[in-house]
Image (tube, rainbow, N blue to C red; front, side, top):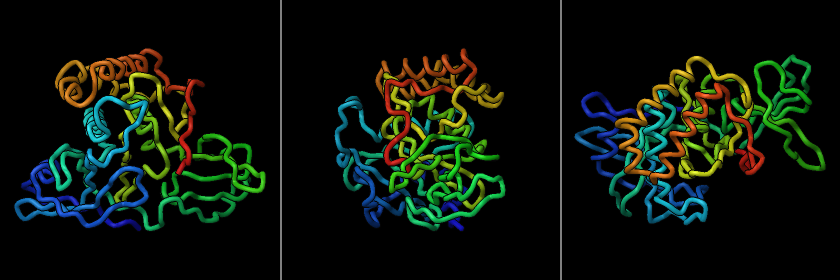
Length: 294
């Protein structure tokens, strides 16, 4: 069981706590390619854990030359909030011990270490052995079969060693489906299994949105299971809210975080999704699945 989220008591909003609170660095998350610091934040007697990513610790990326990864992380949070789905932990820009950067509420991960895989068992569908990839808390799996089985969506074949392949699948879960729509809007170039954070309360968050909002099609994700399928009525309503918000306050806010060309491309992606009424499909011009996938 994962520990509950450490949300500040009433009286101070999470955004206020993260923006105004005093940051105390507890350590560095070494698995990250950029500087990611785990911190305590306190403000007016309230405390929480958070992740602080200073701009000074970012590695330059040739295909994301404009702006900072920290700004894109905040932009992803703003879009998530505008959908009404709350898929991204509260994220703000602020000054910290190592300069300006992104500060995001810490969400306790599942107990197993990132990337751990343990043997599952035959689930009764006749699909054979299933290996559950724990970082997604049962949301991702490897199946020794040609079809995903009931309750799962196929992603693609993965090499599992000794010349063997297995079918990589994700759960047919409405929370993941919402995240797939969000990723299509923000043009997420790196949706891995390790970026999925379920909580003990049933919520699902997505994290690590530094490589998003490119003006070119960069969508690279594990959540292709609904590719080409009709969007749900809920998704259409969320996209309509986004379209309207992008013409108002959300558009103004994103204009402070991403370039004008990227903002125009975001509007175009929302319009394109509404026009097609379907989840996008891989373009074939860009690797569709991130590596490593977890």
